[in-house]
Every structure is written in C-alpha cells, then in structure tokens.
Image (cartoon, rainbow, N blue to C red):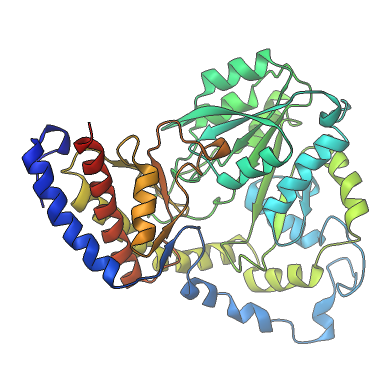
Length: 428
C-alpha cells in the first residue's frame, strides 16, 4: 500500500497505483459476489434474539390488558396503557403523552405530516391551505425523511451538521424569520448516517426556539435511543423536559420504535407530544383504525418487560454488531488514511458509518462497488432530492452482512474509493 497522499503524488506514481488497484478490483469482479451494505437492517443473528417472543402467549389469561380489555378485540386506539407507560419510560415522557401505533415509526411520521397538511396544528390553518411550505433538513441525513417530505411537495432546506448537531445559528435564523418554515427533521441520538448525538446546548436551543410560524414542529426521530455500540455511550438531553421548562412543549413530536430492538418488520412504534399536538393526531387516527395490534404489544411487554429488559437485549445486540463496526472502522483506517482524501465518523452507537470520499467521486465509488458485487445506498441519498452538492458522502450500513462478507465488502469499498479518486486526479 502506498503511504504517500494521492494529492501529492506525481502522475507516474498515480498510474502505478491505479494499475495495482485495478488488478485487485478485477479479481473481486471475477468472483461475482452479491454483498449488501445498503440499508440499516439487523443481521439474522440479531433477529434470532427475539424469537422466544413468538411463543410467549400461552393462554387466554395472558390476552388481557392491565385495564381488563380483551386484546383480541377492538379498542384502545392509543395503545395498551402498560405499553404507553413502557414507551413513556423509554423516551422519558409522561405515559399520557404517548400514542402507540403499529410496527412502523416512519408510518407515524408520514401520518403526522399528513395531519399537519389536512387538519393543521396549534389551531392554525392546515399546512396545505397555507401556500408554499418548507422543512429544514440537517444533512447528511435520513433519506426516508427526505422522500416523505418530497412526496408532500414541501421544499427542503439543507442545514449543515456539525459535531454537536445541526447548525443552530442557521436553524434559529430561519425558524424565527420565515412563517413558511413548518418543521425540522432530527435524528438526535446517533444520527443517520453520521452517528452524531446532539449536544446539551443544541437540545436547549431547540427548546428555546421562537418560531415565526405558530404551527412549527420539531420532528424528533429518536430511532436509536438505546442503540449503543460503545462502553462509553452518548447521552442525549431530554427535549420534552427542556421544552416543558420553557413552556414550549407544543414544539416537539417524538418518535421511536422497537424495530431494531426486536423485529424490524413486526415491532411496535410510538410517538409522543403535547396534549394539543396529540389532539390533532387523534382526529386522523380515529378515522384510520379502531386500534392497532394489541396482541403484538402484549408480546413485546411480556418479552421485554421494562427498561431493564431492553438494556439486556441491547447488550446482546451490541455484542453482535460491535465487531462489525470495528471491521469497518479498522479497514477504513488501514486502507484510506494514508491516501489522504477520505474522512469518516467514529460513532458510539446507531447503525451507520458516514464516509466522505474525494469530492466529485461518491457516485463513481457506488458504481464501482455495484459492478464488483457490493450494493450501497445510492450516492446523494443523504441529501434532499438525492443531490449531494459535493458528491462525496456515502452511508455504510455494517449490520446486515456476515463478518466474512463485511470484510470482503469493505475491502472492495476501499479499492473503489481509491480507484475513483485516482481517476478524478488523473483527468485533471
């Protein structure tokens, strides 16, 4: 491996490096591999951890909620009382401020935006009746947030991410001066894809926002609230408590789920908000369903029990995925540090590693990986409209492949990153 930074190498050395890497790349191509690092999916071993939950209901006596309701029947639109308490404990909010949904927090986010569009928040006109709308989007960010926003025809404004969280100077300026700014998307703990946890100062500044729009909302997607991979995990200040101190508890709407605690396809989702906010959500829910899957809620309660049960299973998850993050980070360090063009995050939790390759090269890296049998999230996906202004950010999702597959995939990724950088430099 060449130890000289690419930018300072003469053309002859760059060509020699390119030839050597192309041989390695061709050898991988000949293997016709099929490796996938595109989505943050738990691996099969992680899914096995929750298999006992499927057989946990043994008799009729276990099919009743704490209030006596039969979970096989209609009712309890907002979820089992004990499940609302479970999520209240998980999120650090009052159980009465929680609505329990189906298996998808993304579905609850979609419905929340839809409720804003058609019912309105804070006694304001529905968003759809207010003309042009804007959402603030910290970037790099979660592609599904952006896709959802684009679906509703809402303009997206890029907010740069810092090591502490979103650029709050920019957030405060836009929120306080523009009534068309209606919301901001946030993944506040172990952000997707960078793995950044918002600092206490950032959380407090969110709580003290003074929006020009009375119906502005902080969409707080706390998907990774218990998803630590380090023995020194990050701590996230409780936004709802900070908002209540400021009298701004109508601002946040908080989302989470058990998707990466138990089964992503069959978990339980929840949202939390103020009484005013949840009143709007209930209007929509009451027309959508008579109640979500309470038997699945019961299964989760009997299996996880409480926060101690969550901690125990998350320790098992950590034992399975931490070695995978180590492979990603060690391979990046070993293979790309000396080349001098790439930078990446070192998250303490969550499901992703964010890599910035040489500017102008991310799309080419993804293409090279695909042609060698490695599927990645599309370049640009971490920005609104799929357009990374610098064409450099790539999201790596280490959890789904096996250890051996991940080693191969990361080797190919690093070769592709270097080949793309060399092509770029040699065409200057």
